[in-house]
Length: 237
Image (cartoon, rainbow, N blue to C red):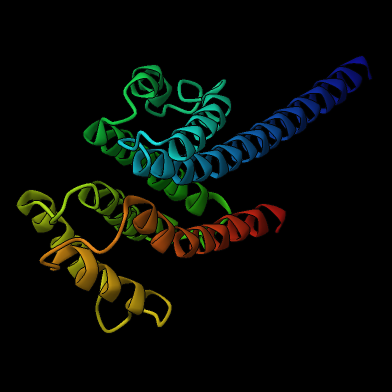
């Protein structure tokens, strides 16, 4: 009798232990998924804000410097407590202070943005493998937007010259080619054509740096907002 009771108690304890382990594992997975999703949302916000900061990086007039400083403060907050180590992601926040002090460094901006795009793709893969397949394609969409954002940044720089410099012209033509094609949407096509005619191939630049920034920013922001809404929707489902 005592042996039977002991065996029953041991079995009950074993089953309880297994249940507690499964519950702890489930909670850990849920917490990890939530952290990865919130980090993905933050990475997309960082991408958008850093792209704007790059676009205004070389401008020295009061209005643009004020806007750039506001973006820098937003980035300060977005980089705060970046969970790179806990999620085995690149410690990108370490490079931000140097870039903040050198806002005109276009190449450094591009390097950090490439790091963010890689993080977005890593988190997309992890979440799609777990329980959020609807996120598939997010990384590619962000890379397509980066082509537009980089084109904007180069255009702002080129517009500071009487005529688009050959080096910038070559880069912008390549980005123009990548941004145009049979799937180019109606709102984008006339904007790119204007950029081509009035800056890239123009004998004399007809656009100011502020014109260039304002030309593409609303469209980029609208597309980025759609991506962020899809992220929020995926988190709620």
